[in-house]
Structure formats: C-alpha cells, structure tokens
Length: 178
Image (cartoon, rainbow, N blue to C red; front, side, top):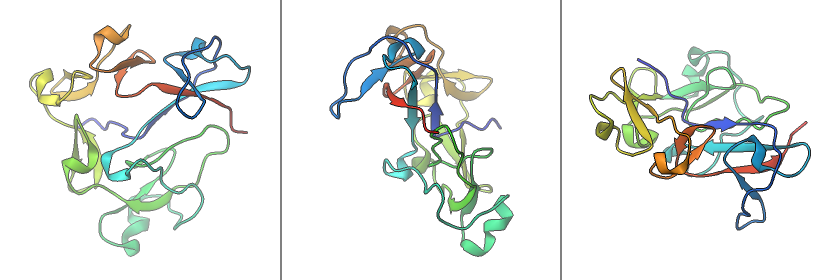
C-alpha cells in the first residue's frame, strides 16, 4: 500500500510577489511567487487529528523506530524527517529529532483521500476504483490508490494548484530557517 505523507511541507526558492495573507505574509503557488531574496514557498497540510498544529520539534521521547515508542502508550509511533507521522512539519534548516507521537486510529483522523492503517497507526492512501472515491476534486485514483492530482493551474483542481499538485490551501512565503 502506498504511503501518502499527510503533513506535507515543500520549500522552493522564490522570485516575484504573490497575494498577501491576513497576517501580512505572501501566498505562493510556485518558486517564482516570493519576492524577497532568501524566502521560500512553504506548504503545510496537516491531518484533521492535528487540529492545525505541528508535532513538537525538540521536546518528547526520542526514537528511531515505532518499536521504541511501545512504552509511551497504545497507538504511539516514531515520527521524524525520514518517516513522518500525520502532524510532522519540516521547517527547513536544522531538522528536528524523531519523536514518539500519537498515530491515527480512524480514517477521519487522516483526512480526505486517506485511511488509517490499523496495524501501523499511520495515514496511507485510501483505496479507490475511480477519482470520486477519493472524496475531493484535488485527488486522482492512480493504481487503486488516491493521490494528489497533478495540475498546471487552479482550474484543474477543486481548490489550488501549488507545486503542480492540487491542494486545499496556498503556500506561504517565509524566510529560510538556518
């Protein structure tokens, strides 16, 4: 079964301005949308179970594999840069340690186009036979698994085309983190 990273963070070097967000940031769809030298276009999409918050970056039980989290409680997984859990966010620069965090328990924890693997407590691509099985116009059904739909513009998506993939929100320009 294909694993779909739920907490997606993509960075690309930026060039000209996009629109302004409510908090004064600049939105972006691709690398050329950011105006300041040294800024990057970042896109974070978190699973519903994250309630809009990334997992802690440097506080918690450090781990190397899910088995290291067995003493932390039922449903705990090892989440980090190489095997991210549903609420993992990268910020460029120094990468956080892998930490024991709560994994998913139901498909609702994971969000549209995803399901929860009951044995690993990780969000994975939902199975499908057609795109409508994936629950959103931002997904395609590829090899019986939901995947982000490829795009060249917003018209190809239910929401936005960012980094040539359909997503629910625009990216935001931000300075690189050392």
